[in-house]
Image 1 (cartoon, rainbow, N blue to C red):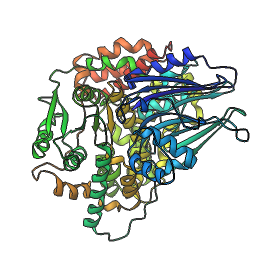
Image 2: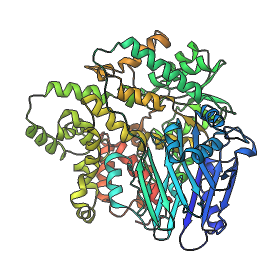
Image 3: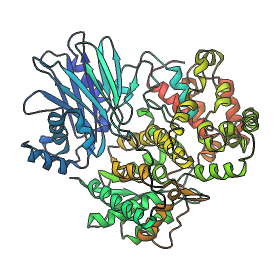
Length: 622
């Protein structure tokens, strides 16, 4: 796991000192080594910060140049099937000098070109420079993994192309992108290729790009998509469970490959417990597990995690947080650039801090909800659709519009406001942050006018994902897989772990499991009626302690509403002067006052805190 930066200039040589400064702004991502490379004419520069996981020797140093000297790579991530790919390439006559996956990635590209991406099973963001020949022009190839586990930001203009693992590596002096802010307020994250900084884009998950400096042309394309659901009617559930179990076990097995110690983040929920079960089986040794505890609160899952840890005889570690405070954010705050409003970033960061004292790599349970139907939203939407199926859509829309005028945080407001497209589309039109009505209040009049017809763009983005499904459950899971998973949860995992130089791996997001879950698993074996995670529960009955509660759903959450109320929102009060000028401070006052009166505005207030932190760190004045 590492950090990468690069610049391709069309206007003279790259300044190596400036490139090194950009690289070292993300030194937290790779404290073990640093590298810099420039082309002979000085017009291309690549930089790398290394977190040594596989092949700890100097043979893994980056930027890495191919033996022929034509290709140069900077690579962030891991390709877990690198041993199998190496053997295949050796059969084709390729030779290797080291034992790491970066050399395999570079050799695969030199042999197969961009088609090598179809063979990679891993998490990555990479850049490969082809210096060209007399008959082939210089070009830069960029790519990001299928799920979006590793980030890649870039700027493209007449001067050339710049890229980096985090926004702080690029020039953000142009200020705020209003459309991206609109998306952030609505969703709690900035999705797809958008970026909060004007003039910066993100390479979306499962996309590649090619830049030709000779012409200045950048071409971006999708190299992989979710398969269409083609599940056979009457599929044997035990056969499906057999296949899922074999896939998960192998996904865990190849993610245990490392030249440094590996552990498991164990919340005690279904996803992380299944990962721990497979790790205990595949490792052939005692595994280390890690969890976080909030004693005396409903968020405390330490007892469930301990139950699983004892069952598999793991070396178990618990971090207790007995006092309500947001001060834990202090260590992470200077690293925030593009914000996410997900408050579970805090416990993710804290458990990463604890974990990295014992291991350098950890496996987590991310992805299970999206693949196997774990969110309560799914059963709620199906129940509401059955209950209110006879209500005319016009009446639901009227109820939603009326609810939008209620004060933020009033109990039941969000659920009613989400009915604008009917119960099944509630995850499209609803938001724990700022829905259509609340954005009308929090954004100043000039900003609302500037957005114009694009005001509903966040909802339309999610609606497009929803409409790609074959049935309601397929639609809902695809919506989450294409939005909140890559642009919230994967960002949270990346930022929290990389802040302390810990590599986190997600076996449930192995491409083979993803394609199985979306292509061949019937929706009825994800969610049916009030029963969710039906296939995972079959696996749990095979692999987990019989007494474990399989219907719980918590994850790494914090008592955010209580924490903010106990401090009287002091954390936001200290930061609010850094909020963008288009944010209506009067509405911020109303949100704080309502929260102190008992309304549930914690998520909205935290979203504003993270926005203010990002604006402050990026040097944007209100």
